[in-house]
Length: 208
Image (cartoon, rainbow, N blue to C red; front, side, top):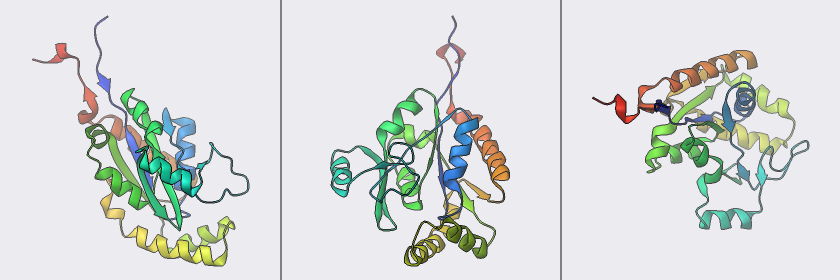
């Protein structure tokens, strides 16, 4: 059988302020697209309704530090007083097999991936920032979660304002409206990325 063109996997990073819906967007996309949604590690406390290995890998601070020292993380950062990170094992095997990966990261993690020296990561990477229409929308979404104290909400709002300043660093910006609209626009971004010529690897017999 003759060899066929091969497309390397996409690594699509989704960022945005707390409450923007990036986690929901990634999960909804993973339900209808042939993509792998990575599970991050965190040292924060598990919330009601969450489960280890589904929402996050919940690690102790000591275990998180041990994995950093072992070089197991693709990226990691301290966010809202807790550590978050993505294991290499959650990403690299999928990209090598031509499978697309989506992950929701804060702006620190996204910046680490842009600076990654690994050529496979640099080729695979694209990123999307989720914006809200106004600050009142952001405040309402944060308050609607009802999973944090007033002090925690104030910290997340302050951090969100700082994070929003980074939206021009991203290849794409998506202004959030409804879940249905956001998913449709995000799928259009994935479709466009899959057709970028730089992702295609042609068999040697295609060469002149």
